[in-house]
Image 1 (cartoon, rainbow, N blue to C red):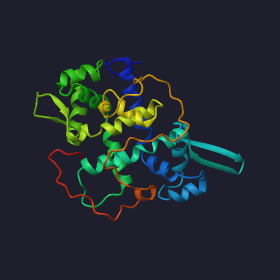
Image 2 (cartoon, rainbow, N blue to C red; image 1 turned 90 degrees about the vertical axis):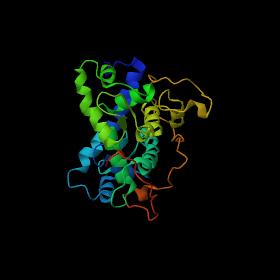
Image 3 (spheres, rainbow, N blue to C red; image 1 turned 120 degrees about the horizontal axis):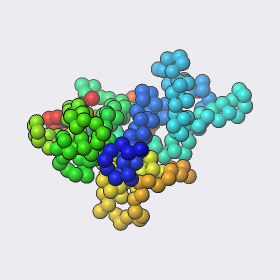
Image 4 (cartoon, rainbow, N blue to C red; image 1 turned 180 degrees about the horizontal axis):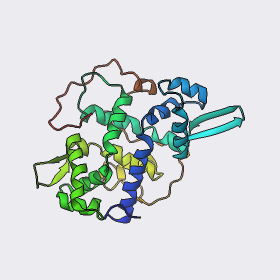
Amino acid sequence: MAITALPPDTDADIARVTEALAMITPRWNVRILLALSGPPLRYSELAAKVSWLQSGQLHPKLKALCDAGLVVRTEHTSRHVTYGHTNRGVALLPVLPMIVTWAEEHLEKADRSLPAIEQIEDSLTLLTRRHAAAILWVLKSRQEVSGRALARIVMPSSDWTNIYPPLRQLVADGLVDTKGTGRPYRLSAAGDGLSPVLGTLSAWSAGQPLDQASQHPVWGNPQAKPAQRPWVSSQSRPAPAALPPARMPQSSPAWHNRDLFSHATTARPKTAIPAGGPRR
């Protein structure tokens, strides 16, 4: 069933990215995925790594991640059960440093230095606003769009004025710009900077190697290198046999999973934040 008035392949692409974000954005999900990096863990071992979760919170989170195909539960014996990443869960991990890179450059600086895990969670909150993926996709592909035209594309079966609450939120978040009431909308520098993140999520959700993100028709940079094959957004989702290389921005931070839970001691760049930058 179509969600937008865009072509079916594009509509499916946006839906898959929205679904991928919905898998990892709920509270604690990213932290659990990172805690499972490495050999499979028994429930008690994993619980010790995420000790901030209250009793009874971990089990439903694990079940949801298993249902999403990111975590696998293996029953060796009736008393020996372990949890670990699926191939798709492993393939998703390289997206996380891309989010950190974007957050370091574009998120409004807080009064205190934030661990990378909190920057990931803050960024995911912005991306999972209602209709955010579709609005960002249209603005990236069409540069400037009026609110009424955007409504006809993003929510064709709804009253066109319903586009303004999500638009106002994206403007407040610093991902979308406008020069005033009645003027067209366009991506801000921060919204445009999401291209590597959204392109990679699109490739991952379509079961493609992450380096294919550079060839995405909207979020990619096809001029960077010759396309090896055409982009097919309706392609089936085979599970990757091994972790594919990620297309990393040149300024990608060197961090390890342990760094996500305690901020590194190196100083952050103290660049000025432009007016209207993304909010935490």
